[in-house]
Image (cartoon, rainbow over all chains, first blue to last red; front, side):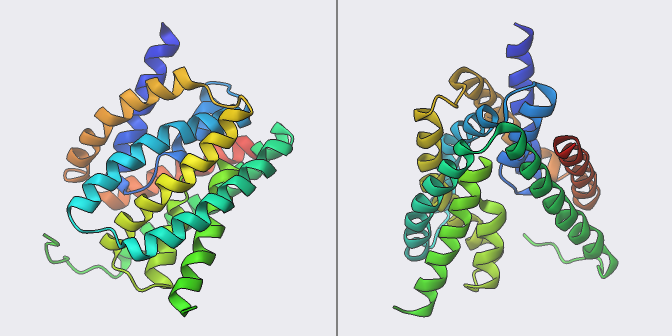
Length: 133
Length: 118
């Protein structure tokens, strides 16, 4: 029961953070499942993907309705993405869980550095910005 | 083939490998790729990226699922929470300093990353 509540709460936080910062949930789900819930790295990644897939469908419908999807680019990127994803998944599934977890950790540190750096810089040159809406 | 198509295919392949390898959507690669390589606006890049993630996450999810590496029940519970959370996030985004939120979040990610490396 406790774990059920904890997983729904993880979803709440991840969904809210992702929406507020405009990023996907995967970089939140995987480390949370591993560090907080003690999931095996492979299961954490597979589970993350199973949340991302339906979320992406719903998000795409919303974006498409507003005319923000460039299908002529999305189709070749998505098609190449399928091949890449199958390749990447096969590599991940062959790797030892501990090694994969460490690789993910490095990926996360790099992303965090990029994100922190950009957020840090943006405001240095900011005038009171005009209302984007 | 025209250069934009070649770039699109290269971008998709790179993002797909990252998605499969790390169990993420790949938006962290596709969005900047679309803006920098293919000259889309941020808004179009977000929308187009989401559409490509449908394809790559489906393929990677199936690969992990076939090998028994998906906890479907946990995924369902997280999904329920995140649908509600996404509404809340839009509300939060209008009320907090996005820069402070981004820096705080980056720090949390960095700590999690260090924990995972060690």
